[in-house]
Length: 175
Image (tube, rainbow, N blue to C red; front, top):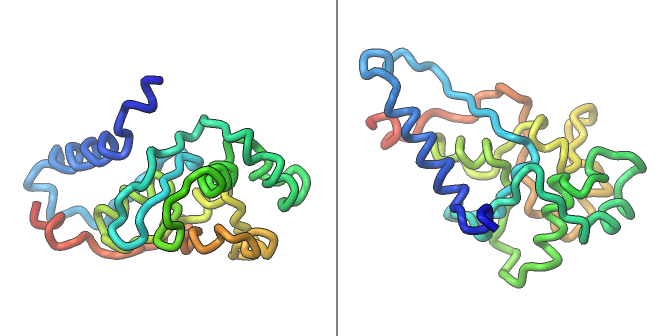
């Protein structure tokens, strides 16, 4: 498939930096914050030290039917994660089918990863993105049924949408 041969992460990164370069030089000092939006179930499994993707991204519309029975067995009936295209199904499918060292991995969503390139704080998401992995915004936490799973260690820290995460990295600011 064409999707398998395209380097999505590199494409997103290139596009992001191309857009930033298009900001007129005289307006750059006026930029107070940057926010990104992406399809919430677009999922990356990354190295938790380098931030580099360890596998090709799972796109928002990809389904992982192999993981759906397991997800349905742990999640409440009709929960958001009970869909083959949920972030949790993608995580479970990767967890069950990838032989790499899972101790140094982390799940991020497309927008989370792109923002990390700008601020350098790895492992931060917001609850809009984290809904499809099982995050409960009412309780402001991941539910116990999810935290008890072996792949829970891969879940990002979650903040409210729009919360400031950090400042632009110095090298990004000078560009």
